Amino acid sequence: MKQFSNVLTGAALALACAASFAQQAAAPSVADQREAHQEQRIQQGIANGSVSAREAYRLERQQGRIDATEAAAKADGTVSGAERERLNRMQNNANAAIAQQKHDVNTASTRMAPAAPPTSGALVDRRESAQDARIRQGIASGQIDAREAERLEREQSRISAAEARANADGHVSGAERTRLERMQQRASADIHHQKHDRQHAQ
Image (cartoon, rainbow, N blue to C red; front, side, top):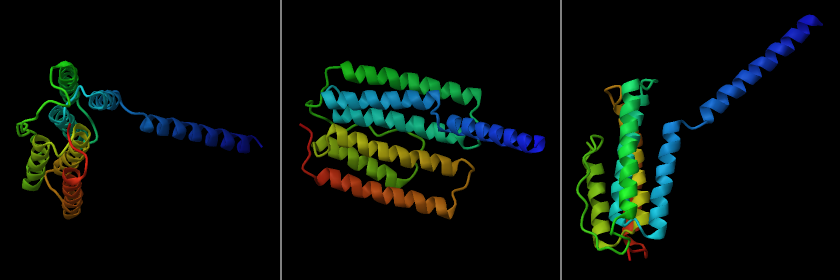
């Protein structure tokens, strides 16, 4: 009976540990929470018109660089103190940029010129660069509004982060390359759809 009780106790402890581990794994990190808060602020600015399409594009590009840097940092299973500090600096800069764009004179109705090409090191693929140029052209022509620009750039950010993870070991496998190509094909179709739908920047 005592042995059976010990087994039950051990099983209960194992379940408790497993539940605790699962809860920790599911809980977002401070960095993830901060990034989610920044995304929410960008969306709020788009909704109230204080962030224009060009500004949404730039802010999302900044979030994309953070995503790609974080993906590369996590690729080896650990984030060093130096990597954590760099990510924190990038998020501080993004936080300041969001505040500036939400309170400057540009609004969703401001006429938009083409945005400067992004400088992210993750954009090494010609197709991704071409898609980025198509988004900028759509913003400049008014075919893509602020909300669409944010969505398209978030999709580009996911591609950049996936590419950073794939490149982390110095080799991109055939399966990884196929996945990246599929992601780019979907992104290309989304850009075409957003440029030719009925929604336009005001």
